[in-house]
Image 1: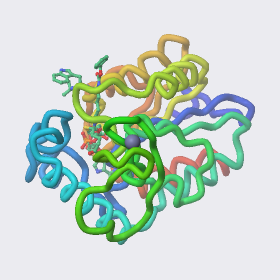
Image 2: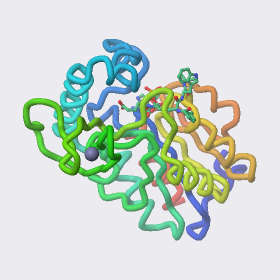
Image 3: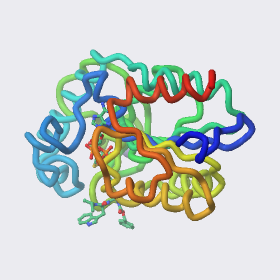
Image 4: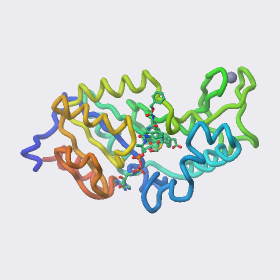
Length: 242
Ligand code: BJW
Ligand code: ZN
């Protein structure tokens, strides 16, 4: 299979799209599926602008809990393999849907966060944004230091547009990719799930790593089934050492 597909050259552009599955072996719950976050929490109650206006305390409690959970997790072998890959390729980019910050903690440099970050906060009024790694956050809901208004997690909720410049960068990277590695995403959320299709349109080879088939599988040049923390290091080992 690898012969038919060819082998990535280090001068080619390698774009990696990651989803919650890449962090699953670190102990971060995925969103969907039997162990997913949405199994116990209704997205409409927690991850929409409407939910936050109705009950900011409930939504902040959910995000404070997730910040604490992620703090107790470590990057796994899949995150670490991407750090090694970045050192080899001249053009290497991670586009992540994850908000956990584990790619950066592992040491990856070129990371585009499509859906924001658990470690960023933004003002609901003046739009100021800041990083905050405190665990735990002080009691009560975070307040904007500039204008004193209620602040919110700087993540992208359902029905909200992604940051325009981030989405434009993601489109541009996908449209100039030679290879796209899609790791641990259900490929069910727009507009992130369009990115591999953009890459395929320009002739990129799509490699998918997942525990199960997704709507993208039929479009992929190669699907590697299994846990990312095992499959990704062994695929990379084969590429590097032949
Ligand atoms: C492993 C593994 C292992 C497990 N190894 N693999 C109706 C109402 C509202 C919106 C819409 C609507 N209809 C359509 C929409 C659009 C909507 C959308 O796509 N909805 C779908 C349900 C159809 N999209 C949006 O709303 C987006 N915005 C938008 O479209 O704006 C348009 C607009 C323009 C102009 C003005 C206004 C609007 C925004 C989407 C934001 C998504 N946000 C979230 C929450 C982030 C914050 C937070 O974390 O709290 O992002 S939702 C959630 O899904 C999160 C994720 O990043 C995203 C994707 O999930 P992911 O990563 O794929 O995880 P899972 O759990 O789904 O899958 C895990 C996978 O891993 C599985 O396949 C496993 O098999 C696999 N796996 N272990 C390898 N060890
Ligand atoms: Zn403010």
